[in-house]
Length: 626
Image (cartoon, rainbow, N blue to C red):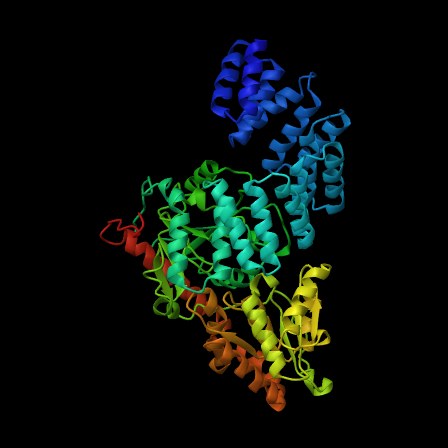
């Protein structure tokens, strides 16, 4: 038995999980109450992604009275993955109290406090302790980089990751974190190169692929190029997809359809500003509403959405097969992804085809590239402009003027444009640097150069990073713009953020990935917004919003025209006063806030899609990717 155990553990440590499992399973049949075997098979199952049976074995092992300290660490990992966070923390504490001398303990507890409790100071202590124990424990530097990214300490994250790379610790996870840190500094080309390296190391790494797709949206303004890149990167995912829904389909005409929504963002997140007003208006006589929430974070918005549901499933601890089974048991007719390839998506579960009709809506403004998605809901005006029929893996369900927004916070009173008291015009961007690339910064610097005495306010997440502040000031200095004219500030709490619009006369939109929530907030706060139209859905977000309020005169075709529009606005201060007084009302009285009409249009699009697949003929024509 001892030789078998040694052999099994060797295979486990080498990542040969199937071989290890067979050996341990054989040994367990002979000695089913052996805690060492229960622990080993539990760890093996956990690494294979089978959380429930893994937890059963691990609980038996740690309650045997013969538990080794490190067993509590692995049990804590299983409990954490199951979403049992209080029990997970207790298990980690037991490991520590038992004198666990395993590097994994420090790393896992650091990760737990980084991602779950978000007690960042405690997390940093555990990572530091691991480094003190083992200076070559590069996973500690990786953990620190994730912690720093969450704290918006991007330069420190880059330093930690550079240390890993300098010492030969070159992993997919290192490059993913480096991509995110660089992207959040506005260094999009460097970030794109990093995520390409991540995929080179592990071509099957789904999170790396998702980061790559997101990074493309920040850097490429050509829908056909985006589509081709996304189709290439999703090839391996599409090979895993089931081609058709396997199950009976109720084709009864005009029956109530069961809608399932999958998202990690049913909370204080930008998605809520667009999803919540539609949810409030959906005809509950025609649809029942079911949610699959892929997150453990709860707030008042989460609770409100949950209260409106016919059923609610917290699925962050479910693997794809378990989520598939839950959706099938709920008999969902139309399953709707609200994430695309953004953080927290469950597109790999969609690959299993748990619902007869699968739809993508919201999330990243690009095709999913996934053959398992039948339809994508898009603004009709973008279909020809971005050639979406050609540049999408899904069929398009067109909706007229798919432009709406509902602020979930009280808007402060409007104020006079600050130029009337300051004597100078202040431009402003409320977007994070991730959306502000070098070309956009150069354009803003050129604008200030042509508008003597004007100033600009910008958000910089990594405000404590002097190097980042200096980098931005250097760009403006190349255009003879003094440092004093560039006011940089950290991201503000929501109340202060909305009030800060009172310090800006004219809002500036980034390119090629426009603002959206920031655009709506700027307009509601009375600020004219200058935007440049492009050739992708991402570079036509603000242009659609401006068109919805008949302010097309603020849309530029190139950066020269962008500067000209901004200068014309700056030179008409009486005009700025007039705009400030009436713009909020223009938005509120526009089609943007006709939520019932928008809900009806989306309902009609979903029913049309259902009829296309399972209409009176009963034939499933399916999507073009299947």
